[in-house]
Amino acid sequence: MSTNITMGNDEFILYIRKIHPACSKTNDDLGQRIWKWIEKHDTTAQQIDDGKSVPCYWGHTGTHIGETKLPKTAAQFQFESKLLPELYDHLDELGTV
Image 1: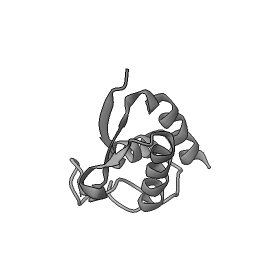
Image 2 (image 1 turned 120 degrees about the horizontal axis):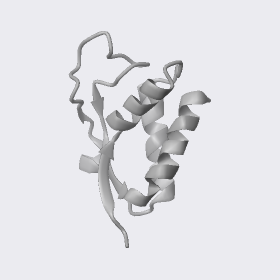
Image 3 (image 1 turned 60 degrees about the vertical axis):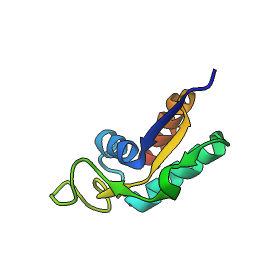
């Protein structure tokens, strides 16, 4: 049984920044790497609105916003939810490499 989920780079980057605060990769780099991983592991995955970034819930100003902090906007994806455990392993790799 396949179950799709919609999640975005905002959630994934928040996880990386929280669990791996020393990660110096930019949000753009992380976002691209995350989408490439999802696309590789789920051929039916889609970028919502052709990958157009949407504003993040935490706003676009503050000391917590920046290229190596939290993003202002983020692309959203629809993909197989069964990939989540492996995806979070990948996020841990991205945060430590």
